[in-house]
Amino acid sequence: MSRLRGLHFEPLWWSLFSAGGVCFAVFVPAVALVFGVLVPLGVIEVSFVELVGWYQGIWGLIFTGAVLCLPAFHAAHRIRHGLHDLKLGGGSTSAFICYGVAAVFSFTALWAWFTF
Image 1 (spheres, rainbow, N blue to C red):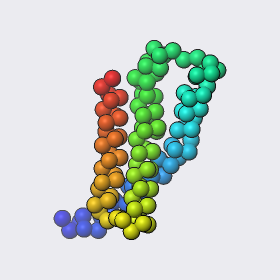
Image 2 (cartoon, rainbow, N blue to C red):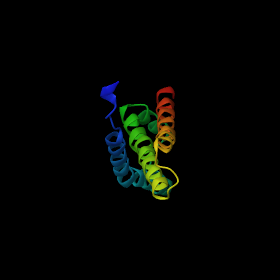
Image 3 (cartoon, rainbow, N blue to C red):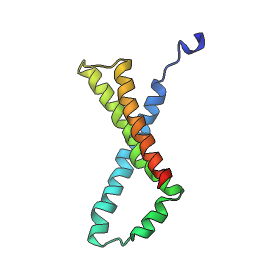
Image 4 (cartoon, one colour):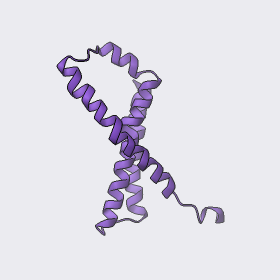
């Protein structure tokens, strides 16, 4: 147990934070543009059957991770540090709550992908 005494999980949270930030900056606006503007305007034509077939492959898993899971950890990290800046938290309890909610959300999204 003495080996774990100096173990810090902050590098793990920072890596998820930075990857989620890249996904927020690149993938989420692209998804909003494609599915929120171009498909409704008829610029891109995609059928529901094509989307389901595409989503059930490995690209759907990558899509779920890049658009849902990583941004959830990015948001959790920002909320945790925002609470710390406001002197409302910042200890292990707020870290457990913030990252725990992001983990539950991510596992639920991945469970839904594997189920459907």
